[in-house]
Image 1 (tube, helix red, strand yellow):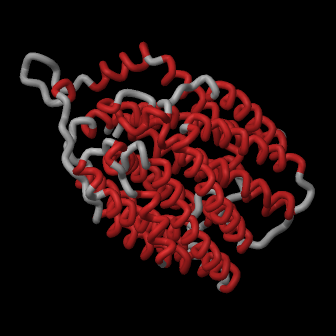
Image 2 (cartoon, rainbow, N blue to C red):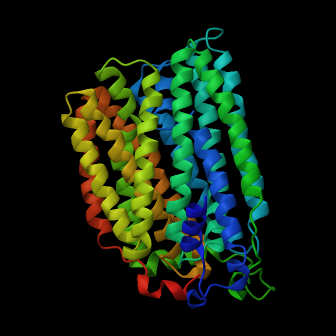
Image 3 (tube, one colour):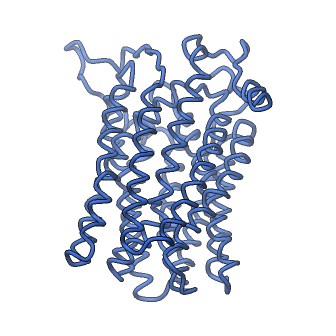
Length: 442
């Protein structure tokens, strides 16, 4: 414990030269601990209904359509991205965002509570009906996550200064991924121990309890009020009350760096379409049982621990843009492995490389968007970055499902690789904030 405490203090002690406002610095360590607690229980919960492994496999028990299976992660991811654009203007004018974030977080958790009840319908009603009910819950899950995402990101930006942001992201995700590994092992045990569909129902109940512990942890954040700039405040009759849309148009017109970022991320989402099928393809290709869905989740989480250690350490040194580029390259290698692997043991590398890509993207992209524009317009940049690219998350499964049905999984993997190559080229042209200036920024 002494070693852990010493390491914690070394990582998260704020020095005077960091020029962090006192209101942020005094609560920094508390917020690191409480947000790590939140993420840990959230990751533990997510290991029972992982959108990249368990949910597609669960959906495959209800339908044999690759297109419909691919829509499950797509609607969740698109739902997370699209609503943020429409919230950015109001959040930009809030001196505190935690109250709104808690309301949206409560809404986000409701569909998860309905999952055990959905499983009880299997065998009592037609599978197709259960699938469409599942699909509706996944839409709710995605949109609920999208409504809570922007205030959550903005809160993180406010309570974690840029000088220490990468190390917090890396540290918290390492702890959270570790609890996620425990969850995936328990999930594998439950899926293999109990008959279908009881195995899924028990796992979803355990996950639901963990999700509310996560919510309690998040509610303990200490957020100080910030000053709202006059040009973002409500008008006094001499100018419009909401100039958010005009600001968005101006950003799109004048900020070429941001436009290149949007193009790269949109192409990367198209390249990410293969992730919806990597578990389902493995189950069919190697004739595996349901418990392997949890094993795949374990690989994702264990490798993610390594990824967050590496990316978290690199982020504050090389900058988020380089982290994102390296992450894109990693997933490109994963797609090559998916196309050419002949054994399950080799195919495991696909999940490991995808996890390294995901962890790098979570560290790099989260930081990159927070600092790609002016600090006072951060919620607007965040909203635009998420929503303007999120539409491609809905386009991707349409293309991937068609490719699988019309050609094969291998063709779909190849097309995904092509998108990732082009996305990587565009991302190399994006500029982030020089690390030497980090200490003077919040």
